[in-house]
Length: 393
Image (cartoon, rainbow, N blue to C red; front, side, top):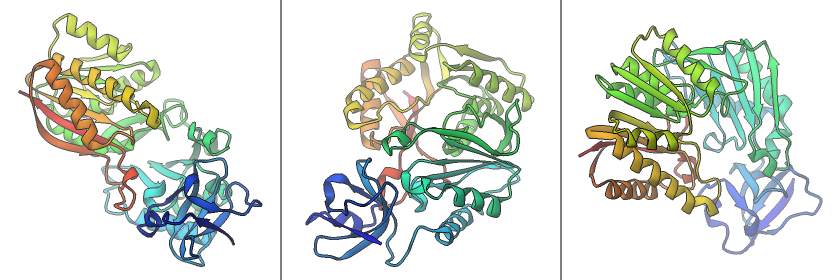
């Protein structure tokens, strides 16, 4: 196996089991290395640090998959790692919840691989060149370990371009239902579009937060912003909300939200608004509307470090509008899925919004990603979803 060496003083993060080696940390790498090749990573003094795969096209030159010498990224290694990852989710009650992230890339020590289960369907993503080389093996292991009725590949994330890979979307097994796949989440029925839906089809990472929203929604007039297919909206309605409004720019997503309401036998007023969220919130504010519970779950505002300042402005404007629309004593669940926005920074931005809104807020709960999206202590980037449940006072 080829060896790469780090520059002097660059080994500390790997000794601490951080899985990324950036281009600026490398001292030497064989010119013959191709994208996705296995490498053994060593310090400038020759100390073994880890096994990973190399990509000359990416700023992350090496992604570590093992800290044991002699290990290779082969079928046996992948089988054991995927089995271990599935085993770590065995306590999730499959009678109540059958949409689960089974493999969460670096957080489960399989960089570049995502495997999600949606009842009898599996949706997977390969996001890196190293995993791309093992695509056939990964598909075979999904069949062997999970025996699904259907498999869909959603390797159509733009991040693949940074790896020098083309985007790919394909049904590997089965025929996707035109009406979508119905899944259970804590007993709640939700329709998922595995072909056109975001990510692998659904935001499984918000499962625990949907349960929290359900708990606090009784008797509320709820406004769900960036509602997508209405997971938070359905949760709020099942929790006893008397009226729910879902706002999103995707009409097909709003249609799925309404269908999920019907699947759960919900008859409360559910208004689906196909508009730009910022524009519509200003319209509601100018009309003097007030809500008991507002949910803000926007898309990623900061894709790179140069976007952070603009992202903070966007989060502040959005939360300011929400506080202006929230009645005193009302609740706001505000999220950021931008990994580059730290929890502390996000909280400061939301605090700034309260200042501009002329109010204060109590933190009822700190919110984060569901347990099947684990966070590694050695890899803080794996904590990407952060949120606040706030009470306006």
